Length: 297
Length: 313
Image 1 (cartoon, rainbow over the protein chains, first blue to last red):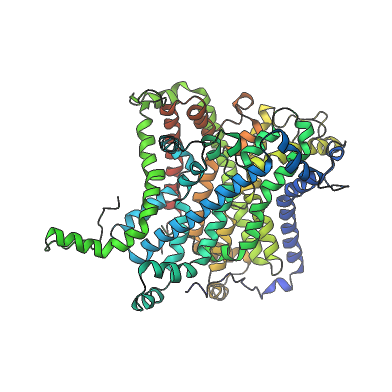
Image 2 (image 1 turned 180 degrees about the vertical axis):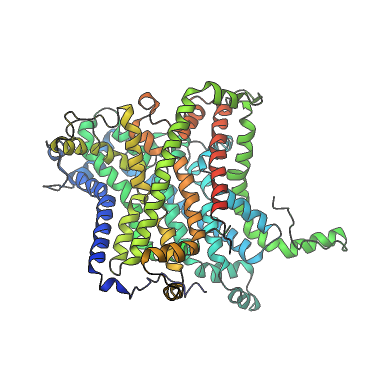
């Protein structure tokens, strides 16, 4: 099966559902219920970010916004900047570290997975076994030695502390490797006969074919790095270098919480929305890659 | 580890220099591609496990050199540290409840989606959206929903329905704080395995279902039991491992909702304990022992899963 033919294709159910209108009705009812459960907190988030201050503190509490305003967002992005680090700085910090991490992770993991999958150097099986094993423990286990390394390199309180440890991720490597395995060698061989150097083969032939795999990697990597709370918590103490989740927690706690309820709502919105947008755009590619994500044991 | 030669390598008859050259010619390109990954992976993932193992046997505060103390960190952890045992208990309760619920909810949603014709894109986006959110960010919303006064949406609803007489201090009362965190985590994790399962479901060859019908499969549930599930073992395994690692690593939501330390340690988790000893007390040796406990638990469960979902075919 080639990458092209295995696209995200919904399986058609011709069958009996057409007649069993009651089951169909129940099915859609259940789906709708699940959508409401999944969506209600997000709906509340959107509404609260648009509520003027008096509506936020009205009794009884209101779920749906009556007089939507963008005041909270303008407050967050402008008036807060006079007192502390401007919120736009946190957005930049998050965006910068996340995007750089994602790009480097794509490059490093795709190169590695390609080398392992298409060149089978001696020891490939052992390397892959170790990567598989690394899927089985959370990153918290290695956080202390990571801190010691980052500290020894003098990188505490720098962007690099948030980037370097998260480039070589077992999960990412695994996804690309599984996808790469099913690329036919013949395409690569043809390029090699044409005399292309190995890196050129990788860059101009393999990378375009691996696009579904690395767009998926990009989505997952973006989401996990954007939302990461633990790494900045231990590596970053300087206010100017905080990322959104950390800054958001500072903003929502402490004094002046009442006055800030609106801006916290806006900040929550700005922290949550990018990941959902990124996923919504890339959904098709993600589905294509996940088809190969199973572990055969 | 990259020096392990499993296949190929150098045939013994050649002179050692020639053999080395031959080895490089055979494996050089592969390793050139692997090198950046292997270095970073070794420095930040593999070696750290060994280092954490070593530090767990020492007393180390980052100022004085590490002093070897044998297994005393572990004995203290198990025998003298009540707070660790609380964190272990909380994490276990959390994982045993949220892990399977998130796992089966993901599967259910993926399965339901394959049964509908229209709106798959919309449904999959909605189901997956909670897993895309930041626990720390959404905690702001949940804290309002579960606010302890009459302004809290949940309290307000329950009061109006007459189910409670007084507002409940959801996130301050030790009785309620862990269940609230579990509820939030289930909401966040009910989509985590969703994509993997959906992909697995869509990979099952439709001809299998046709064949199944001839063999006497009557309804969707039998189809699921006898055709779909056996075909999806690799995805089920991947999903299970992710669910275990996620459930035992609970920290963000717990601290964001309950604070640190939480009331009566009711929301104290293994990772919270690790964070407390490592990065507020800088007792790296003891914290490494906590990390090792987490490592052993998730790794053992991961191995068990690999065994359970073994592909017999």
